[in-house]
Amino acid sequence: MAKSNELKKADQDDADTIVVNPAKIVMDDPEVRIVNAAKIVKADAVHAEEVPTIPLGSLQTIDALQPEVAIHPLTTTPGISIPAPLVAQPSEYRRSLDDWFHAWLNGIRPAYLPLALLPLLLGSILAWTRTVSAETPLGRFHFTHFLAAIVTVCLLQFGANLINDYYDYMRGVDTSNPLGTGGLIQQGLVRPMRVLIAGLVLLGVGAVLGLVVAAAGGPLVYLFGLIGLLFAYFYSAGKYSFSALGLGDVVGFCVFGPLMTLGAYMVQGQTPGPLAFLYSLPLGLWAAAVIHLNNMRDAEGDEQAGKRTLASILGLGWSRVWFFALLLGAYVAVLLLAVPHRTPHLLLISLWTLPGLVVVMSSVQRTDVPTNLHLAMRHLLKLEIWFAILFVVALIVSTLFPVFPLIPAALLHL
Image (tube, rainbow, N blue to C red; front, side):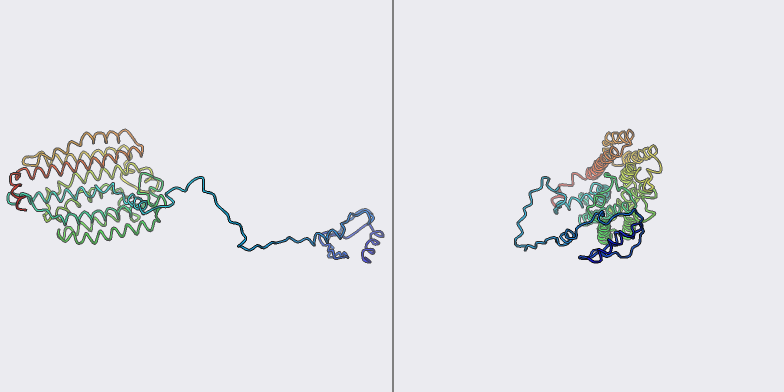
């Protein structure tokens, strides 16, 4: 306490100036030291007894207080029960195999499969009609080749759809369009790379199987198959894809018209000619119309993403004109096949689809809303199926009618 008394004495003797720095005061028990004075404060003379102080005992008491930490073994921790949630988790967060099956089924878009299967059916039936005669009233039909061609076409179509979805997603096409793609990538169900790999695998397996099927048709079928494979991949792949250059309608007409029809015709063992090419035109024009209507529906999103389809280039007005021209061209081809002398006039029954066609065309004419155009496209697909069925049935009946009396005897010899 001797130093404390000396400090008090110094304060009384010279109160004009005092060096104080509260931040530098260090309290030791029981002495107080002032170190590193850095600030000079001038004040009036004040007696030391008047300066408020804190008793050192209270500081010692505060310093002596320490928080208590209690450690308990885990075995003594009481059990915790979690109540059942008020809202159950949606079922999509726990997808079953059935859920994944339907997700992938929606991704490969089987609704568009008739575009590929109908010309395959037409070409096969057309080749069969060339083998019907008085000697062979039932004709010759290679079912094995036909079934293998169906599997090949399905694999190529599904693979092309998945690849198309991947590259459209990478270019920002249909990313917010619920009416566009299958939605595997857009809904976050499958990673984009897995969709691409699945598409390439399907395309590769279909190409290998196509090589086996093409062996029954000759070198020209190999050429048609190669062209179809390139169209399937580069329809949307690459910076300058066919669909982005406004050639989607042309590719659809070629693939789902002459290439598919004539390829199936040759797989059945027949040599194509001008008549077979003419028979391939109606379904090719139908397919081009479906693709064009699909592009009309997506024209706004495609243009924002930089995808230049024919629908976005022409605009809505001229796109309607082109759409009507494609459909009417399909019926003109039917007239050329059915009206001339010594032609199967029964093919004209496909004109029964004209009332439905008028409904579709009027709906397209009166609307520019994507949802309405989507409904019109769905009706158009159904209408094409009926058109093709009537066309094929008329072809079969027209072929069997002259040899009908010989059919029972031919059935007995089977």
